[in-house]
Length: 236
Image (cartoon, rainbow, N blue to C red; front, side, top):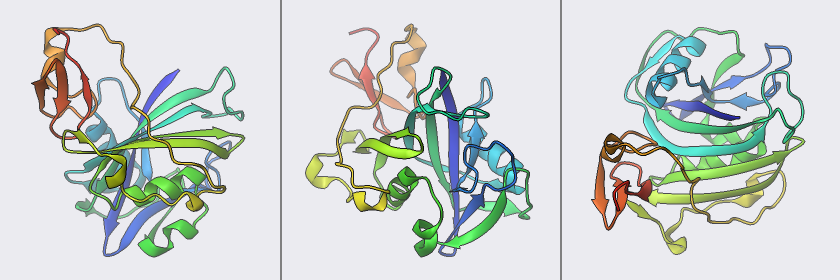
């Protein structure tokens, strides 16, 4: 089943707010450090979800979070599931945000223990292998669409496409990616972002399906002027 979620990294003074997942039983992320976030509610935008989840998990209210990329996790178990790629596993599509403006008082939630971590110490935490890779992408200005495949908690495959504006970046201009950051070396690949097979309506050509930003039509293509996501027009 397809699942939608958000992941938000709050940054301030050279530190990033992280959550140590050590409070909940049967937590697939038990012992790991994560950003803040969770599942989208019906009818909720990714931005609204990120704001709500951060407030629920930390007591802080973020302002104008910036969408930096989208991550795809095929066959990732959730809840009481324990096996990757079993018939009950879900495919997760996660909207990744960064926020450097927020108000409120930091409070502990039920998910885990919160801590402000020095940015240079982030990769020393107990992270998912893929997190060690995509956290570095947050420091680049290119929008990313990444895919991470896990089997038995080991990262076995990943790929990414970077965009700037409405253009996919050529390989020579891609931000550097250190594959040694993961548990094992993995060759970097470039692939197209996941495709869509929707039922078209005229209004669907007036906004970006991923970030809801403004779009332009170009040679029977719809191109988002914010994140660069490109798709076919409904009236070619």
